[in-house]
Image 1 (tube, rainbow, N blue to C red):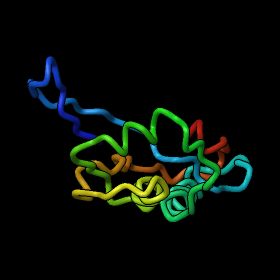
Image 2: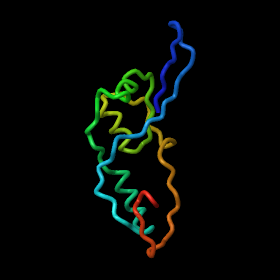
Image 3: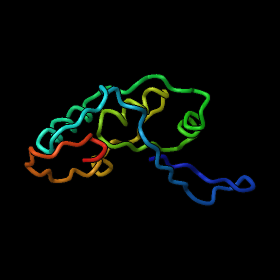
Image 4: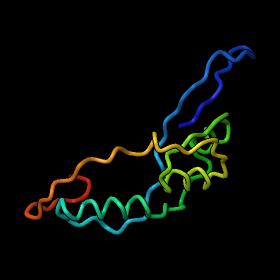
Length: 116
């Protein structure tokens, strides 16, 4: 989450909040897994490195570098994305982590992680 000042005719009127997604995560191709295996997959995803192939001429770079405050989740991928753009984090807070859903203990159905 980024917080920026909005300026009109040289005056600051309000703050602007911008939500962005982290950089792409380095994960192997997704195969079909059971619900029991999905929890392990989520742990792997949460601890995976990000791909560092970023367009530094992008709007994201401009937005990050002109923001007054940057707040991230505590997940490595969000912190690493911010550092990739050489931006400073004001706060990392678990409030912004993805919500964890309860997982069934099914072994008989298999889907890709994007379906689970």
